[in-house]
Image (tube, rainbow, N blue to C red; front, side, top):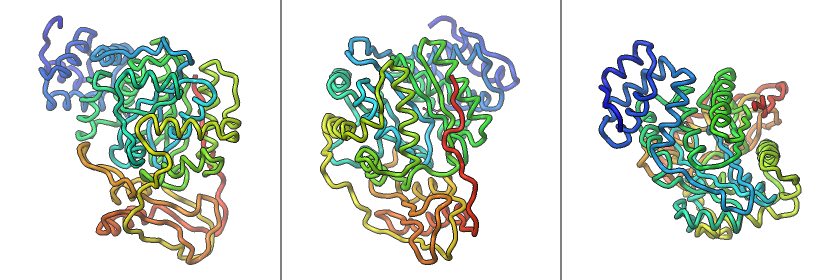
Length: 426
Ligand code: URA
């Protein structure tokens, strides 16, 4: 493709605060995807971008080059309006699992091309793989058929979708270069734009368990992604939501699937229900569908779609989920109110128990994770179970308990309620 550039020059340019031209970006993304630029050079450039950033024009070219590294999907033949959602990831964030069937039950097609967990945040595919028989890989024809017939699919993106991002994300993960607004925005939006969804709702997390700890950074990431989406003709709305505290009552894989089924059965933790319905309403509005997602839950229609969705991907929705071989309970040391529960501490504990992976090729334990038995602001009494740690490998308990220590607090007085939905950006 076009002129060849010297990658060392491009790295130096960015390192010294210069800007990269369109032809340079097109060349380097193409050369990296094809293996003509090595990981060590791309890692150096990624670090320079973490430190120096990309301006709006560089970012737009970078994102387009990542999209052009692969193929685009086409949902225009479907009979239902298509709408998708993406979360930047958090602890206990299993919202995709009930959300996709709820929105599908209201008449939309929801193609959730999802990822696996890295570090302390869980991955949707890892969670679903705890269901016996369920598979993440679908051929393109299967994906389209299930979207048409069932309305919701949660699967891995095929190898042809933004391959530059696949390589680059794995590299960033092991080189300390994930935390960069332009790199995250282009990574997420290149996949969503290549996927071909005409409408997209983003859930950008902020707080200790999120990539963007600070709210201002989360808002900037949200604005950047909304801008990229709009520029590509995708109707995009973002929510900035709180991830200083983990969502729901469980972090792990099978434990989060069990919680999703509770929500779809009309119960489940109130924060998960609130966030799921907020995102569902926005998705339906963008899809031009006038329907009440709470009614889809109440009537049991969303649960029916979940069952069809799991079956459609080889899973048995009635099969018992794997249970951990070992558990350790941490009890409340005194009476009081749970005043703090830190998302990062819980996420790292679940990860150390085996729910997450340290390297991308590591396996995860389906049954490992953490359950917490009180939410922030709730009363607790001395001796009651506060946490249950779950794993198949009990030598992990101590390190997990160390991760949790200092991540929670019992006080005497109630704390002001922390709103879950902080901002809506369109
Ligand atoms: N999720 C992605 O897909 N890419 C990032 O860079 C961060 C989160």
